[in-house]
Structures are given as structure tokens and as C-alpha cells.
Length: 241
Image (cartoon, rainbow, N blue to C red):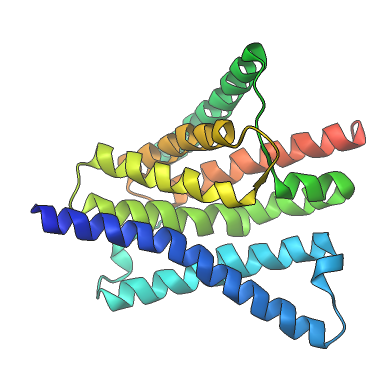
């Protein structure tokens, strides 16, 4: 591949990453404005705002952008392979989920041992004020967040990079873009620590997608990772079931 092709792929990947979130912010603002006309103030109802944001960002916006991107490049749905997992895919899902949760445990232990702080996602702050939000978020990880984010970052971003870069480089760059976008949803100290953890975990998702060529696999792993975290956050906030 020529350097021009590589440049175009990287530029497209960056544009997809940040453009999707800008588009999502615009869509969410529009929805908030519309529902506000009917007397529903999302700003004063953080739990509802979180659900609405998840639906319209990972669901509507990411899904819509994927359709427009594939049609615009005349790629067809085959560019993002999705199918029911077979036995090998199932084994990768189990192994990947264990690996990604194990990496989180190791990273958390290292951070604690070094006396470092990790920033908090703003979603966690909302959940601490209303722990039932964590329970609502668990199914959304499998229905919207996992599929939506994997469609964007593994299906479109990594897939586009894969057209002109070595698979390993495509995985690394897609993971870096995935990690970087989380910066805007963080609060507190230790943002770089959080970004670093997100990058390492994204490498597992990227490798799983490259190995299986099935978007369902990283989507389920991603959903499992998030769901386990929110279940743990609920138990921590409530002191148990």
C-alpha cells in the first residue's frame, strides 16, 4: 500500500472516531431540547439522561454512521462481519472475558501498589447517587454499548485501518483511538491511568475481532466487562444485594 492510502485510512479512522462523538452530542442535545418542550428536563434527571444518551449515542448515532459510511464507500454489510458465535467464537468470548477482567484486576492492583489514582467515568458518579442505575446499565451493555462501540471501533475504525496497515498496527491504533475518546467522560485525577487501562483492554477486543472475524465476539466481551463492573459498583454502593 502507498503512503497516501495509509494516510487516508488513518485520517478516516480519526474522523470516524471523533466525528461520531460530535454527531452523537448534537443528536443528544437535539433530543434533550425536544423532550424539554414537553416539560422533561434531562439535566435535572441524570439517570434518565444517561439512558437517553446511551440509546441515542451508541445505538442511533453509531448505527446510523455505520450505515452511511458503508453506503458512502459502497462497501456493503460484509465489511463488518456479524454472525452467531460458533464453538470457537464461544471459546474466544469466554477466554477474552476472563482475560480482560484479569487484566483489570492486575492493573487495579498495580495502581494501588504504586499509590496512583484512576479517574472515574461520570457514569459511575451518577450511579453512586442512584445505585439502581447500575442495574439498568447492565442489560444496556449487551444491547447497545458493547455492540455500538464495537461496531464503530472494531468494525469501522479497525476495519478501515486494516485495509492499508498490518493487522497488529491496525489493532494498536484503533485501541489508542478508543482509549482517547474516553477522556471526555472522565472526572478527577488519574485520567492518563484510566486511558492506559482502556488502551490495554481494547487490545484484547481488537485481537479477538481480528482472530474470529466476527463482531459479535468483541461485542459480547465488551458487554461482559462493563456489566461485571457495574454489578460490582452496585454491590459496593448498596453493601450487597
